Length: 514
View (cartoon, rainbow, N blue to C red):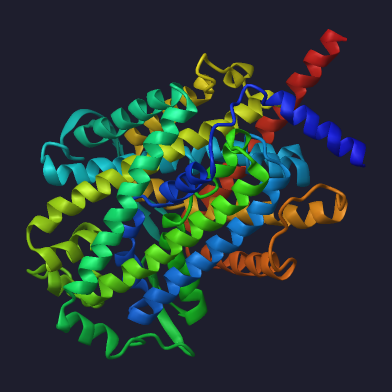
């Protein structure tokens, strides 16, 4: 067994020998944190607040999301340290559950997980740009191809979907093209851009949080903290709206459903494992970067929501005249961060927050673009994607993988809005978290002699607890949000026949060469 392991390691080194190890601990940590902090923390608290109706439960949702994310990151740290090769979860799943599962991850990453996230974050960048430049708008059409829908799925009316080129998605795809070009110039340039933007946006998020604490309103503090668990009903039932049908769910289920937005805001931390082959001393730096990055962002997110609760009342009135009266629940366009800034520093807060979110989303997308291409590169090297995707340019960047990712993400910019692109992302992402951590157990059993420079703290309790919590969320999403979850499942399953066709093609080539 040990000979097989050493042989596999040698193959991995040869396979990715052109990837240059140029990233240190700071670079890797900035990629984790920078990819996580995008637009979500400034927006999704409004939707969570509408679902839970309680200041206490709002904080519980963010704490639960941070706990789940950090547990998963600690587990991935063991796998990344043991298999520090380009591709991250693709490699982990290939080695633990088999090549089919690795391919399904790469397939879903290309079609949805990475590219739809890139598109959505780019659209968020453009949306906030519209505050400063009104001509950037989703309604300012340059070329409208058509409108599809609305149509009905289960009990929910979906759409309409407007497909075409407007000034908002034109700016969005322009940023994707520009950042892709930057990353074709080499990893070092992309890492420098990532470090700068991540430091700036952490400072900006921290600054907003500090402002809300310093200039907190007495009315908001009284409304939120005098009865923190208002409408919380920890031991009872809650009304939950699914489409047009009101149903009753328990508090734990309500929290599970509400974590979708928070989990999306905490996703993309896996990106550093995609570029594991380019991290110096990966057996030490990868686990540390995952722990430091996710831990720092979780702390920032919880503090930011505490700050929101000190600046704005949790419960608001839809369509109310003032920012304060709309509260967190009904902040204009769900821009809670903007509303908090307006309350604390006045009318200029909207413009200031737009700049902050533009910086945040720009830096986030740089990390997503930088990391994602390494998955398709690794698949191509394994013969599970077009061989040309495994090509490197003179800057040692996987240029073909970067441009394929760019083209598909740009297409998605033309075919959906921010909300439409994200609706079913979390289910697919969480599904692969579960499969990857199941693979951790499989590898511990099948390959006990595998070199593991870092072993996850609390094994098997911690990864087992993660599987329990994540599975509970997945089941509740299947029950209460089928319109978002079944499409995600369909995309994952659609990769199976593609894998079979690729395998047949490989077998045919092998027979011809023989």
